[in-house]
Image 1 (tube, one colour):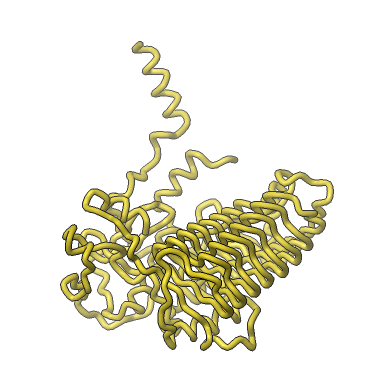
Image 2 (cartoon, rainbow over the protein chains, first blue to last red; image 1 turned 120 degrees about the horizontal axis):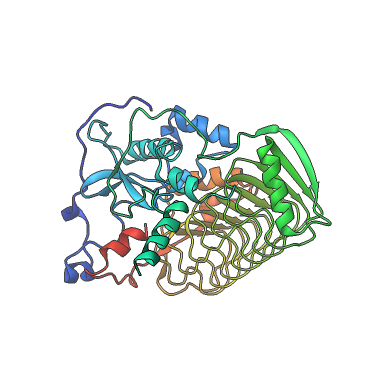
Length: 131
Length: 283
């Protein structure tokens, strides 16, 4: 992981976002809690991700373009589609303010989590995988 | 009655049903920052792109061919060339590994579905629902594709150098679909995330009922679907488009500044307070 300047986590302020009439009526924010359409800034790519992309034989971030740092229970987290759950970032990992930098960290951590022998799918594969 | 219960329990245990640790959407899982560097899923094969082999699919059923691809990956072959696919259906499905796969010919319907990782090149055409539920990797089709191209894809780059049929990218939840020619009616129907690039023209009802995501069209749009609206193209969009077209090996002389960007108007969004869990699941 690239070394980043440690700064306080900046929470998304819902008050600053524009509320639609529907949101006002139901008193709840509609939609994603981060910009799912944010395109990655390839200048921010980390050495680990470069290595991963090269290993897979791809030309760019490929499926990781859709990975962003989101929020779960008010804490930074990444959605792991393989486990169908949010994976929370431990408090000791300090995150930068820039969403692009945060997204790159989210991608890197997600790869490490998915390839880990501790990933929930490992147990499922051991139990159900065809030999 | 007691005996019956005991039998059920022991069978469930013997099948491993009680070993799973997945507890559902609300599980509180934390990253371990000291996780080792590893690029392989559990159970994936370590293949070498320089180790190449060929399969003649002429007398093989789709099951047999898919089994052969799997066994070659087990042996470490990283480049597999399939000759004579002869438009057979469901070829090359379920590959959850890095691999360089080349089909010399055309595929039938549901080709290369549910893949996670490989780079696939098809020199011919493909039938319906090519690369449906694709998770990651790159698929490049040299000629045309049928309808429901990239149905429900979640990630990766799906490229067709020719034209595609109706309902391309229906229900897509991520990834990028790139079309060198024209796209049929209802392209991007109910798309939830991801991006579609069409260098040619788009048929009627483009992006109908789309929840989110972005559609870029280089040619004419016959009509926009319900809740699909035009949006302003940003410099970041243009940089990304140039990069993606290079990856797709098409449109080297294409002027990205003339592209029309289509996004969701979000007027059809109709969540209420009873649905927050379902909303999370849609992400």
